[in-house]
Each structure stands twice: as C-alpha cells, then as structure tokens.
Image 1 (cartoon, one colour):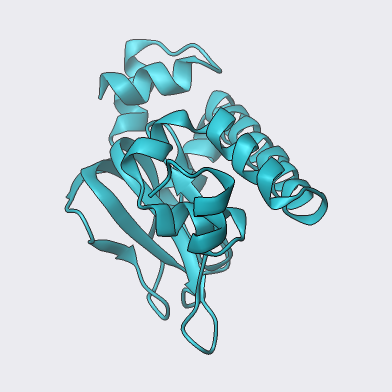
Image 2 (cartoon, one colour):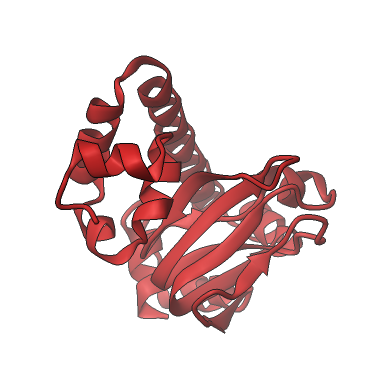
Length: 189
C-alpha cells in the first residue's frame, strides 16, 4: 500500500491514521493478461488505480471495430466513468494488456472517503481535473493533427508503450490503420 500512500501524498499529506482509514476502502486485485475488468453491459462497481501492468479502455462500434480511448499505466485511474458515476450498465471495455495489479475503489467508498476527509475530496478533484485536461488534449490532438503528428506526440508522451503495446493498439489509439502506422514509423512492425 506504499504505492497508494505515495500517490495520494503527491497531492496532499496524510498521517498514519488517515492513511489507515483510506486504505480500508481499497481492495487489491491481481489481473491476468487479456482479462477484462469491465465488459459492455456490466455493472461497474469500481474504479481502479493501476499499481502495475498495462490496460486499455475501449469501446466497440456496431460492426465490432475497436476504438481505444485510453491506455493506463502505473498510478493512472481507470474505469467506464459514465457507468461508474451514474450506476448504469457499462458501454466500455477495460482489458489488461500486460498482467499486473490494481486497487479497486467502489463509488460508495469514494464518496464516503471524500465526505469524511476534505483532503481526499481535494485529491479526487485534482485527479479528475488532470484527467479532464488530458482528455481535452487528446481530443485536440485527434481533431487537428496529422497522423504523423499524432504518432510523434504518442511516442513522446508514452515511450514505454511503444515497446509493450501491440502496434495494432497504437494504431487504433492514434486513429490510423496498422498499415499507416508502419508508414509513419517503418521500424514499427
């Protein structure tokens, strides 16, 4: 749980009693490669803090084409947030690409921690704000940049993913075909 404490303390300090209370709301889950934490139609019971591994959040269109909304690495939070916050069936998938561990937090637990501790309400607000900013940047990148620029930005932001994520997933994430990705960076085979 040191990872959780360090993660929270990047934003707000905690004493031992506060951290003991907070950690009581989290459960550890080991995740295998290709395991789904969320599938379309599921009840979304948790949001997840990544301790290790690589994950992708995506949806499928009516023809079954996959659209990756995000990758998640260590210290990233992930879920189908529309479903999580509104307590409606999932419309997204959350799949493990490289095995790892996550900490699970229920919506009820999140709300209780935030209500009981102003520090945690602040923490969750800061994390949500950072996520919103990142999402806006991603949308801007997809709408206004060329495929080459999108690839270069991806490589700059996520150099480790280039080595650990299938090229098909990278192509889906930046909105190009696998063939286009090969032309953008010929060494990406």
